[in-house]
Amino acid sequence: MLTLNIEDDSVRITQVRGKRVTYAVEGNLTAGWVQNGVVLDKESVSQQIINLLTTNNIREREAIACVSGVHSIYRVVYVPKLERGLLAEAAGKEMERVSPVPLETLYTSWQDIKISSVESALCLLGLPHENVDSVTDTLKLCGLRLKSLELKPLAVDRVVDEQTAVVVNVQVNGFDISVLDSGIPELMRSLTFAQADMSEPDKISMINDEIVRTVNFYNSSHTDRQLDKNAKCFLSGDLRDGLEQVITYSIRALPSNLAYPAGVDEGRFAANTGMALKGMGGVAKLMKVNIDVMPRLGATKPAARTSMLPLFALAIASVIFIATYILFSSTVAQNKSLQLLVNEKTKQVVDTQRSVKEQGDKAAKLRDQYKQTLNNLKAPLDYLARQRSVINRDWGDLIAPLPGFIYLTSVHDDGKSILIQGTAPNGDMLLDYARNLKQNGNYKQVDVTSITSTSYNQTQFQITLTPDR
Image 1 (cartoon, rainbow, N blue to C red):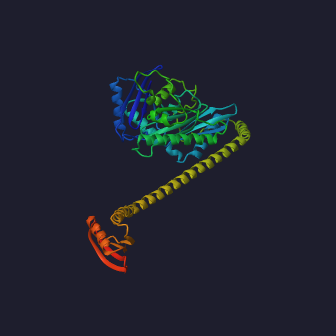
Image 2: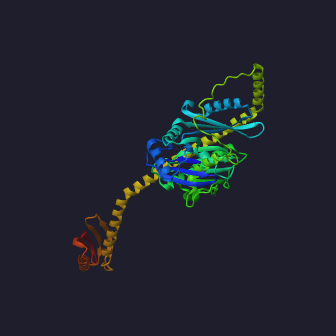
Image 3: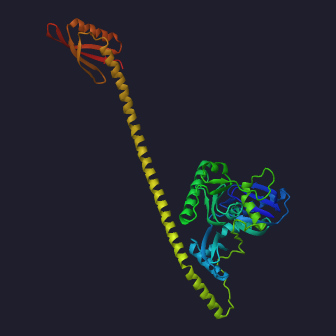
């Protein structure tokens, strides 16, 4: 058995015999050949696949492959137990209701899973034509016969050994998150990274945020069976070491379903393992969904059928359907009520995120304004600090040589000169004081500009100093 998984940066191939993987090979792809799981350069990718097969002497030509879940539509709805034809009609109507794009642009598939004697789960899947066609066309160029085609997240989900768990698979340009509930993927999200050149820490932060958001959304619509911090979480693909450091749920290692060659990182081949398990028929043990997305098996719209039943048999079937519908009308109403609650909670989350972002932006703006104000005040404050040091120095120079009988009544410094006024007992002491100021060396000029005797032992004076600055 041959399995192929085409990633954006590589192609991963396994050859399986029984439960033993005889070959697990990986070949790099040039950037731009594949984008979000869509093969853009089919000839180059097919040539790389041929080279890998030839180099490893793999002659098998029948293969199972998977396609990316990006832009896919996956929904689970619960309906009363119905006859097969009525189930197909219900699946078609539900798919048309939930699809945001015209159904003619999608390959649609569905599977019903028995929940009880009176209820079934309809698992609906829609894939863009280019997701599927780009892979099938590439494998045709390789000369491979496609036995089965599967959605990548479903293949990875099949590997885990828990019926209720969170499953995360990380690729180079995006990641898949599934929430399994009793073996059914209730929620499935395939997301791309916000930027192509995101750093690993930013990628890890984004993945962790989306895991929390997905689990919270699941819990809001499953009040009877919540996932708490003890919920099992399985990681595969890239960035596992970093994610283990931030995820708060119970990290579990992927089980070894197949015997791989020594030294092979089984986590990078999780999708291949899931496809091999499907090919071996070991599907219904834990994960119950087994949807094949081959175009020949998935129809955009249910094919018209010509009924040869007698009219009375059709009438009886209609009566049974109506009775069953009435029996489950309360369940439908409850589902609608829960959906309204989910919508309300989702709006609250979006509003809260918007409010937090607005408050953060406002705080950042205020912070920038404060920084600008500080920058604007820095030069004046520095100047004042320098001036204060100069004034302190000048004041010390004036006080240090001052005799005990001379008193200063005012000191005025306009930045260019210093004007001192005071009283002295006599002119000799005043001149000695002026001479000491001159000898200080900090003044270019010391002028006694005014001397006035007010009494026999008191003289008022005025000295003008020109600092050497």
